[in-house]
Image (cartoon, rainbow, N blue to C red; front, side, top):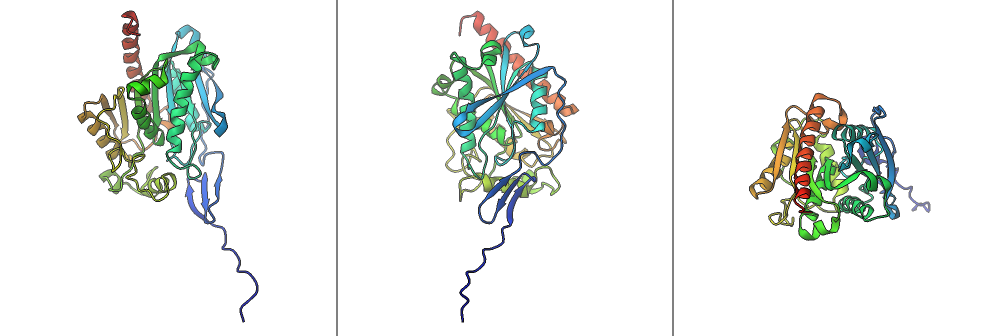
Length: 341
């Protein structure tokens, strides 16, 4: 005789986990922990001031602004966007590793650093993060048109804007370079002007493994299982890593030949699973005549600059970025003298 009692629901269990921060359960629910799964002290010597601001209140999205406390002595500061990493699934502008890196950027570059958050997967699958990245840059343009944030009004040089990001943030930087790499795109940003991009170990994907992916050791900071998990959780349901958001040269990806890219530096690490894909990306763009250069940090793992922003390798990275910013300053000053803008 059949039992009249209803079958008990299956036990709730974790089916996906990312760095002790994100937990996805078999019933589809998602649990997040606010703090990262690693302890990193914030090294703030007081030379940089910072504050938070909202750029999309309807979605609860904010950003953190940093600038040297002696900004008045320095004059107008270049604006340097930094989008955090985390495979589009984890990360925050408020995490201490992001805070430390941005503090050093503001101090070493003498820049107004803008560190936005963006919606995370799997609750908000791609292209949500890309859309939010664009909204943050457009927020800057709106502030510049009057009545906006006082830090932008009093200390930002809007003719010298740089966009950077690490890992997933580097992928956002690529998509912003495409979106704003046309006369129409530049008009969207006016009076702000992006002068360069820095892609720090960009998180690109593809259905076919590269050599650095195939040979990546299991004990790497970013290994194959985590790499694949991020894509599975962040891409649209049913999509593969050849989706245009993940693979700029995959089937269905928009052609890049007509994109007017600002000078771009692609930073790679010799021990990074993403090394070969990023090098190939830069080589293909360079073959199209784009102003792209690769800086290969031999022996460095994924995210070395946020893991330890005060390492020797991180110091060299700061010098690379600073040289690019200085070159842009000279170009802008010469253009102003000649009344080009």
